[in-house]
Image 1 (cartoon, rainbow, N blue to C red):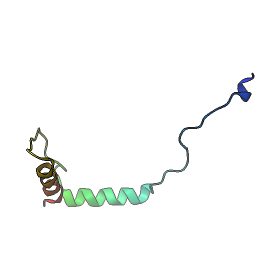
Image 2: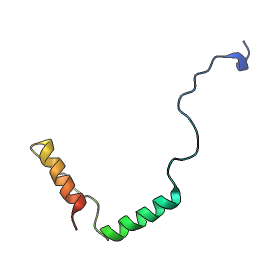
Image 3: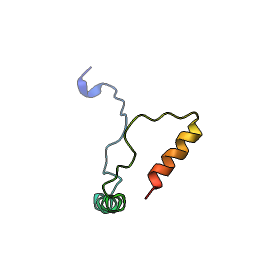
Image 4: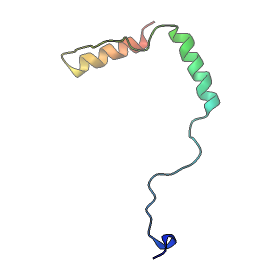
Length: 65
């Protein structure tokens, strides 16, 4: 068989990006202005007794001012 005749399987697709870069840039500037110089999540190792406790802490850290 010639290389052109070999069966091929295509995995995934290539195409235009689904995110508008201009809109994403404006959004990131807004996030940076709101968050200021504080990190999104505090650095370190955090231990919790339950997943619910960890999720509540994470939500509190994300929405803090």
